[in-house]
Length: 379
Image (cartoon, rainbow, N blue to C red):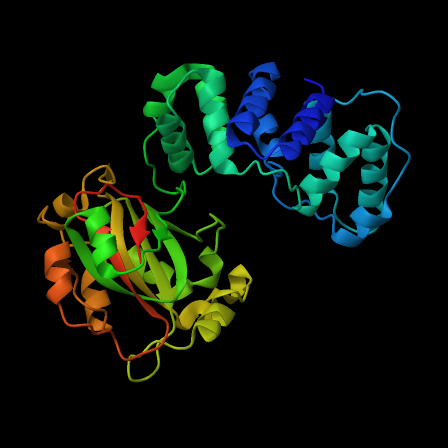
């Protein structure tokens, strides 16, 4: 597949504000991709590379401006190969070597291809093709329900990976994807509501919990191997040695937990959000893990997605709470002062006194008792 086909699709997507037209353009572009190219097409058309950042900054992107090629010659495979070579370039003289390879790539690109490449490398591809639009395009181009594509993207942690799976095996392959320890999944996110009553009328019977502002973390354990991931699925295991120790010491087998980490004051109240995030964002070398600033952060897990090696994310919240299993970390959570969940309905919410923890950075979180995880919550 020529990279020019993606560049043309990107320009057409940017030129229309109609969602259905965007979906149709993207779906047509994906149909042109070979089986081993469809994941690359999804990554590039959503403004990403398979590698994430490749060591090319804004200054280099702005400064390297060769004349565009007169005719398209690059394939999506050519672009992927060159980006991987740039990312692999390290050591003395690597900065200039990256510039040279970027120059060669842009020299082989037409004007529209250069525009797409700059958008991908800068993270500023503004064409209105977010993952929601692309998920619908993947579904349309392969004749499968969009819900199946979204579930596949959630379980693999990447829409492009889900697209490759559906291309190879169709709907059945998507639906066979299961939660696995050490492979992060896309997180449950909160949605807003005008009031508690409005939220409960939308969700039905719900569990009401206080949310303290911390850093979202997904904990995975397989055997003695523990990995911690952010909401963006970045590996932050080395930043949180204390949480690693807690997860490793929990009873049972393989598990996946969803929660947050935050710093606590001596009296058990949460620290300011910016202080928590300052410690959370501090990197540490593996040899310095015990001294990492994030070592003082504590984990508060509010959901279990996999317990003793068995996925339970498709069970409703009410079933998970009443299954007879204590959620890993729940006892620690209560000891640290988090409120017990309260089951409520819209009618009872109208008469419930308004109260909240006497500390900043809190919000009420409603979780539908019949909902499966991960799903949206109302705040």
